[in-house]
Length: 122
Image (cartoon, rainbow, N blue to C red; front, side, top):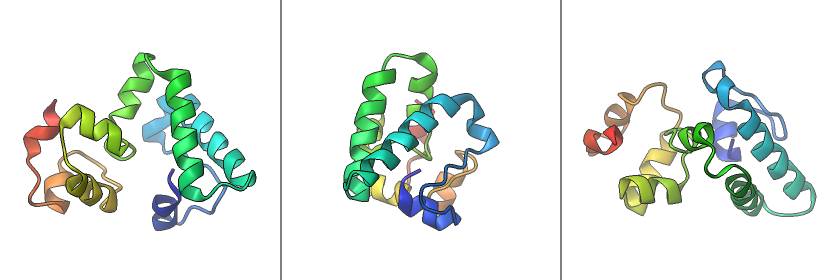
């Protein structure tokens, strides 16, 4: 989990918590999180470590159907994924990111009233 989101949920730095909701994706999440911790330990900033871990995880698991399903999950989808898959712009991505976590897709228009709900039916 990207540290600002972890901070919001009260998860200590370098701890990995996986919700039951994401149990089926545990392998991918752990790989990413451990890579991110490793890169921070090597001196990279939080943002640099996150970006590098994301790249490495995508390279390792790209094409795996379960991983592709995880990539589209609204609470963790990257800007690049959301832009490519949904055609959203930077401003909307920032609003979505700032209002995470979402417990259901129906929370999106509640938290972001200007959102076109049809975007997430793709």
